[in-house]
Image (cartoon, rainbow, N blue to C red; front, side, top):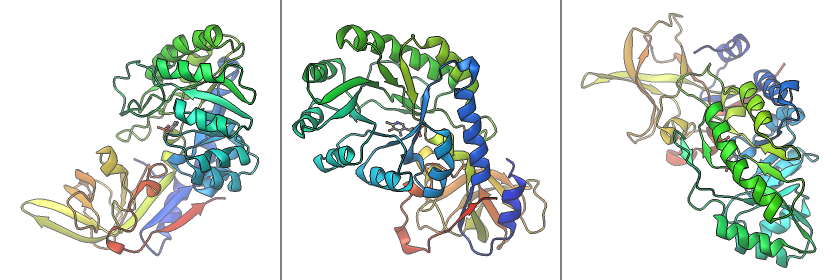
Length: 381
Ligand SMILES: *Cc1c(COP(=O)(O)O)cnc(C)c1O
């Protein structure tokens, strides 16, 4: 695990911990690479790229991403208002289960580009507002997603019966226009698995949209879920292969869209903190760090060891022992990394957790135990 030199020199100058440090130049070049893979000549008319704001809706990150994305996917009224304010001109897609009438009205007031409808009841409530909207129906298809970190079955989207009901409601509706299907079915998949999934989604959705719904130029949003491997921070999702595969799969005249979150922002956030104590209990060494998983919940939710870079003041980084890195919370669940190789660490030494740019601060239970909040640094130059 390496830390880019510009981040390292910044982190060495930090005086207060814990701190979130966002590497905006790194994020910019990553977004540029993803964008150019998707829009490369080999990918023909590549998919539109929307960023799923729930991965990390931080304003400075949204501003960095804006030039490289075609839009932003939001999943609540809160995200909708926030993203509209930060990026007034961005195209927005609004999805998520349990949208309230207020949220539906807000979506129309703020001019969302696409509304992802999750149920017939939601569609009826939308229809009763009697205002124009461009719609994708969210499908919950019975396609296998083995190997996925998360499978999005359950309450998300609709089975074929509910989709039929919606299609009938939309037929001839004066103000609601059915544009296509949205299918975010799994997350944590590599490019070949994502392509397998895309092929099954398209195999069902395109004939349904064309032959049953009579849409000549259908749209299919294939969702997000592009894999991020926390055990191999250097092994990125293969955007080039994915784009080339999609180009081969896409039937002519079908507009594809994807909406990744984690694979866009995970790599460029760091949670940097310092060692408060080192102790050995019943033969097991614990490094107690300032802060905890109430700031960086990711290792707890994913059940992994968060990758990290130890920055001991002595400089020697070679592992000399095994230890468990914990925070300040009074719960045995407050573990960043369990029984991992570490160099000799002393109180005051710094440890920087990597891959803390997505589903990190914003999914954490900040107020538990009332410790001070981290500082936020947006590195840009
Ligand atoms: C969470 C979510 C995404 C983004 O998923 P990632 O795993 O972060 O890529 C995209 N679309 C929908 C509907 C989601 O709920």
